[in-house]
Structures are given as C-alpha cells and as structure tokens.
Image 1 (cartoon, rainbow, N blue to C red):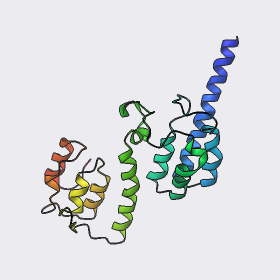
Image 2: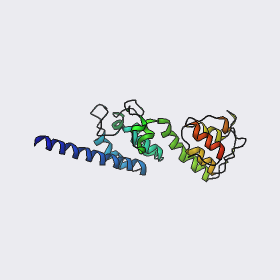
Image 3: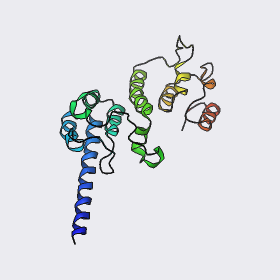
Image 4: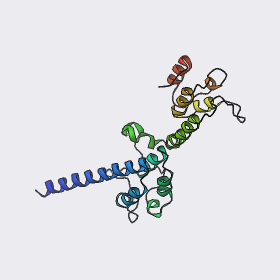
Length: 196
C-alpha cells in the first residue's frame, strides 16, 4: 500500500513539474518576465546543484524558447540572473540525449546554433518586411545573402529570402554545400523555389 502511495505521489509531482515547465515555456514565448521570475526558482532552485533530471527538462529549453521568440528581456534574465546561474550553463553538455530521442518542440535545444538562427530568423523577416534588398552581395566574402543562408543548418532564412524573391542565378548559393543535407539542396537547386 505504501508503494502505491509513493507512485501516486511521484506521478502527481511529475505532473505538477511538467505543468509548471509548460507554463514557463509559454511565459518565455510570450515574454512574460514576471511569470518566468516566479517559476524559475521552483523548477531550478539555486541551492541545489545542477543535475540531469527526468522530471525537470533542461534549463536551456527555456533559453531556446525565449531566443526563438525574440523575448530579449526574458532571455537577459535567464542568462544573467543569479537565480538562473545555478542552473547549468546555457549550453553545457549535461543534456546528452540524441536529438532524435527528443520531442519535436525540444529538438533544437540539442543544436545551440539552431537556437541562435531561430532568433536571427525573426530579425531577418522583420528586415524583409521593411523592404530590405534580398539580392545584395556581401563584400567579404563576396557572395549573396542567399548563398550565406544556404550554409546555415536551418532552412528558415533561406526560405524567407526566396519568399521575397531572392534570385538564385548569380547568387553563388548553388556552390555552397549546406549542413542540412544534400538531398534537400539538390531538390532546392532543381526547383529553385523553396526548401522543405
């Protein structure tokens, strides 16, 4: 009987922590700094050393969510608050699961570069909406924004440039081997419209 009570308590604790973590992610996404400040101490207490836990997802998922949605105030708090510094360093290797074993919404956390690119991607979209020229060539190295986007591990910026009519011919994009796989790249160079 005691074992059943313990497993019920564990299940209840796990459910509460998961609910609290999902609230944290929603707050990071929406930029609700007050909610983030109230939840972080519960999920990531400063007094306990960082340790991988099956109950509480890694701290960097909250960082990734704030970065992806461009929530600078939340990101600044998560990176600089003494409360948060007790959690693992933002991109520590304590999260050793392979990306394929993570749920889709958390896979980008295994690749910190993708988190940064997601944050930059929203800035790129903003500039494009304001009329930025998608066919400008960079001076150093002498290639187009499209060619540079082709080398990134995410296709979001590449697709945004193509949506705003970046010109593939003469862009030097075809000569850049992207990190995200040659099959997508070959389909892109044949179709010349979008990468999927």
